[in-house]
Image (cartoon, rainbow, N blue to C red; front, side):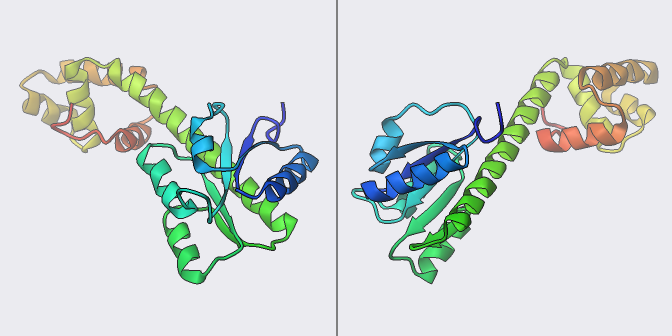
Length: 209
């Protein structure tokens, strides 16, 4: 399956002609899409767990596009958005972009501009999904550490030497070395620098469990 075929574009616009036109454009470049006339209709729909983005009209019946952008964020739905509008202005576009929109296109726009924005949005979603997957894997590794190993890890990444850690924890240096070895193995870290990067992503620090 190609990257394009594995992705999904959701088109939300109350104009049936616009929905049909955009869906035809997406199909011509091998992109799958689903269309909706309202934001509520989109929310009722079960979404596939695949890289995706939303092409969203600003002026919608019920909730407008900008408010819907905030509703999605509040609900923890982080799908990149490409805004389209026939009535856009600069303050509106600035507000949308500040809230994380990928692009803000004013109708009529070139097909290629829309496709470029959609591909950028899908790339962003793929990157976010990869980051979430890597973080989940890191958390699983961290959860496998016993309490004392987590303490040792936090002190190691803070820059303390084994003998300092032993003094801090009231144990022997050899015990610290053993725990440190278990930490490196369980976290699948090849080096101290890599362990520090992992700890940063996990927000591990002395005193945190």
